[in-house]
Length: 237
Image (cartoon, rainbow, N blue to C red; front, side):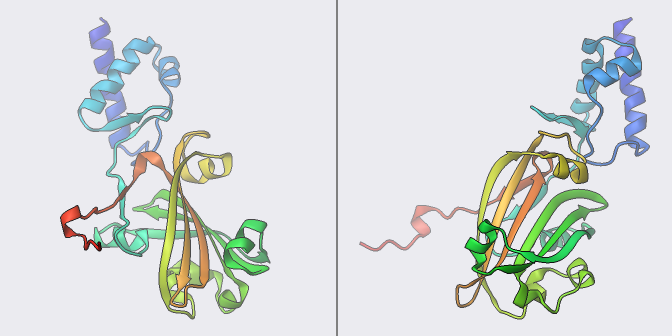
């Protein structure tokens, strides 16, 4: 009887996923929620979920739970670019939702990086094919952002908008846990794993012109770095 029961639950969940009840990459209810909803044991529910995972329909991550399987957003760190351009090259439709646009006093950290007291701060949600994949905050010196509007930053990257030539950037990537504000807009559980990337972009004269923080759901994102072999490096004795 249990064998039949888990197959019934798996079939029903498959129909719900394929009908779009749960978005691609979206988090599924917990095993405890499914146990109550289907009136089945935890073992039976897990067996149903595992059968769908074996079929590639859903996946799971430790400390995160079950979610609808989706190709991860991949970003190459080989050159300075935006993840939106990387996605567009793969045929993914990207969108920006501006959450906040304001000229504000710089915090101590932002002041220490950009060396200014007033900044333009833009908070946005980035979507790929309609699903959220990053929450981003960007700060730039108020002088450089004075002519920009909310519509400008919604339509184009800062790299295309600033009146300076971009020279390079330093990006620091670390693991973190989703705080409530980010969990809400990224549609992930509070405390679930995220990747936090802080990027300092400089102009050709090596002056910092942008500070940005990107928060990515860890189950949807991966970064790729090409490492040259030692034989390809020029050695100086």
